[in-house]
Image (tube, rainbow, N blue to C red; front, side, top):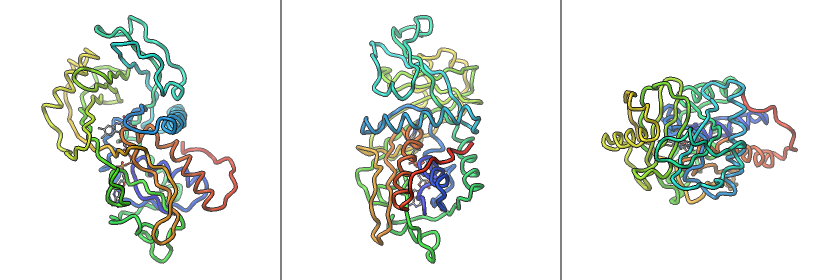
Length: 331
Ligand SMILES: Cc1cc2nc3c(=O)[nH]c(=O)nc-3n(C[C@H](O)[C@H](O)[C@H](O)COP(=O)(O)OP(=O)(O)OC[C@H]3O[C@@H](n4cnc5c(N)ncnc54)[C@H](O)[C@@H]3O)c2cc1C
């Protein structure tokens, strides 16, 4: 079988299919280091993805998976304490059931200007560490990686080896689904983030309703990711210096210690958004079964493993396999 796409969504699906004994080829038109997944802040948090009921289920499964990977020491995956900040009582967020222990922040845990906050633990994935590891790990388990640009998804089954076409295709091409499938409901939602030196921070902090725009502060091992923007239908991948300065300023409102941080860089990427995530079965023009797995918006890292579970179940049905417990995710 062939997975089209080597971002986090395609790699998670490939991992689950290897668990089930499939011979897996991962086909992508560029190295994973050049994917949207690589530059993501990559913190568990449902953003610009729908519908809520399915996002909650996929998000809960992904949360549990990433928390387990963090406990097992999978490279790049950590579980961080986090704080969301609010000017009005947030009540219980709709995604609360996915994260388990969630409590109101105590007054002394809140920066000035914020009467409310929520505390919970979130998985954070340091993508420049994790994605190379995951790719290598999948290759060691037998996945074949092929670099090839497709112009139409219908070419996918025979693309890696025309003599032995794939019996199943998983389509995880992110934003490229717009042209490849084609699916015009897939649109870019631009995000700019700033990387700064870490002045000793360990707590992830966010304010989704900062008057200047969304603000989040995600400490990693060697740096901190500051965000961000959600620019609907913008294809511009050039990072804007004024936007970067505004991101640093509003993040410093949340975490004053950032005044001591040095700016290391700023990038802009395009989230693959869609009115609803497409996780759906279909058939390619040549009759090959396909499982679509794209349109995760700002939540690819938050949903990838839950979606991969569903891909795994459907792949079993395609193969006529009876369900049996799989050996679990790489560790
Ligand atoms: C600034 C920013 C911050 C973000 N922060 C978070 C966050 O904190 N948490 C979170 O959950 N999400 C976050 N996201 C969103 C997340 O990055 C995406 O949802 C996720 O990366 C989508 O993964 P994907 O595998 O579907 O797509 P991609 O990573 O884009 O991978 C697509 C793959 O398809 C391949 N491909 C594309 N076209 C073709 C073709 N024609 N032929 C062959 N192969 C092709 C590519 O080579 C690539 O391997 C963020 C995004 C941005 C931009």
